[in-house]
Image 1 (cartoon, rainbow, N blue to C red):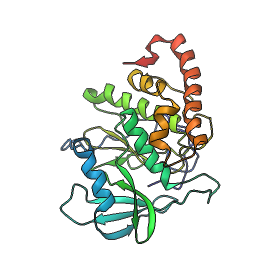
Image 2: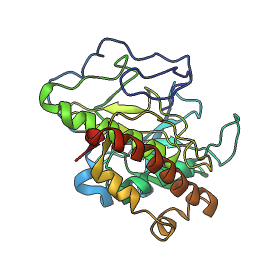
Image 3: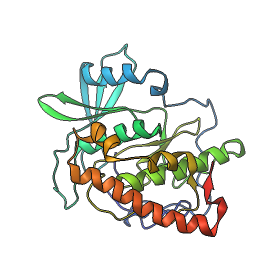
Image 4: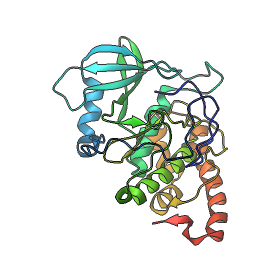
Length: 274
């Protein structure tokens, strides 16, 4: 689920990436096919059912995926349930390639998404498959990655404002959780112009540096929720997946964000969108 190559920059949204993967074009990337505007965010109406199904459904097959350095697999589930498959990620906590990686960070990202009401990270749970413990991430379809679209897609006029707000919210989330690997393969868009975020195994380190240093706008509603976070609100949600130091680092990154955003708010009142 993660592109093995890295990107130098995202021209449209300013993502800080490592070079080598397909970069965004200066001209707008092709939009998803405008056929049926089907939403891949089916979890919005039956989240609890999907979470339980991901934990308990029979796995009838595992398919190797030709993407990602963590070698995810696609687990096919018995038919008849609310989900057909999940991305299966067995990534024991550690630094196998020099970067901190953990399947637990996938689950923590989903729990943070729920806490903030972001609704961009697919349901993700811990489970065991063939005696291995890992993260089961709901397989979202139909979607295309920004990599498949050869860059950051430009939404049709009626989706333009909402789409740009989603891009800002996604970057704010990356900064907060310290996601070190946002790339064109990990941001997905469905035909209804929903932005879906996947692959967070490298998030939630103790690093205080922000991934997205340049922000054109921030979402005021999400920023209010981020500003209200505290150890008392974070620990019950994240303690199963990380240590107290990593939880404190979330708040420290939030404070770095605050200092940066206050400067931009002073310079431009339109920096905050509500």
